[in-house]
Amino acid sequence: MAEGERQSPPDSSEDTPPATQNFIIPKKEIHTVPDMGKWKRSQAYADYIGFILTLNEGVKGKKLTFEYKVSEAIEKLVALLNTLDRWIDETPPVDQPSRFGNKAYRTWYAKLDQEAENLVATVVPTHLAAAVPEVAVYLKEAVGNSTRIDYGTGHEAAFAAFLCCLCKIGVLRVDDQIAIVFKVFSRYLEVMRKLQKTYRMEPAGSQGVWGLDDFQFLPFIWGSSQLIDHPFLEPRHFVDEKAVNENHKDYMFLECILFITEMKTGPFAEHSNQLWNISAVPSWSKVNQGLIRMYKAECLEKFPVIQHFKFGSLLPIHPVTSC
Image (cartoon, rainbow, N blue to C red; front, side, top):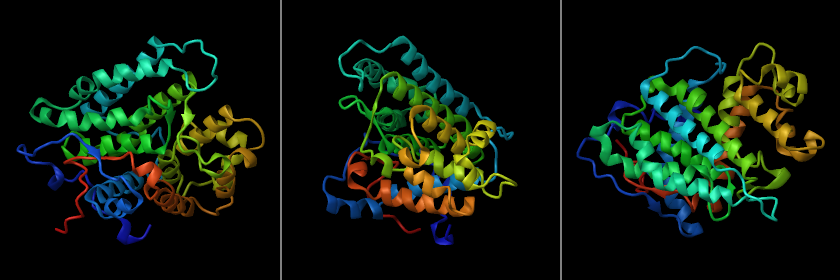
């Protein structure tokens, strides 16, 4: 990664807002393709990509089973995700003619929509209660669309934005970095996969075999960082069933590959062509750098994804302010 890309952690102390900060309900600001310039110049974009890259650096060369600190805030976030998981069990799919997009998802989502602020309030200390309505919007945006019953990288980005906001208000701290990815994001992925399977959710804006994955992107970035300088696992090994089965519990990237092979049939090169091409890259650091570039180009710079992103006081649309 170029030095210029490495930004200061957005969870550093100077980003902790003063108690007097005016929190606002985030709203959409990118309405037309020309608005994309506003997004790329915004404080929100700089803080979001800085957050992604900080976590990318934090998990470099570490297994999921690595010993790391688990703060009370991390435990509370996992409990929040466990609640969402339990609600799936309490909301079984309904019988309907269409195979995809089970309408029971709307019932599940309505519960989250109603309870989101209460859930976020369990994570945020009372002296920061004013931030709850702003932060809760990102949680509601992070689980799919209840009209279309679909899920994609824009929803995943909303969850990363939710975590970024919790860093900016000081709920999550610098020493939570590894746990944010390994404990919270891993649990989020499990819940999203359960939603996708249970309610047969459609991929949002999927490029089919030409996209990286139907639903996720970030675990491939952070998962490839975990594998940098691995003593024997090389990119060519992730298309090897034995290597995946033996190592997926340690590496997020391989966990993603396992999920794809469970959900799709036929030759890997046909159903996941982009990933197949990536398996020919010689090193994990090159894979990681390439995926970061691809994420910016295919997700963060695509109007159909970013038109849904919401901006508030924590992730503002105003241009980057130079210190």
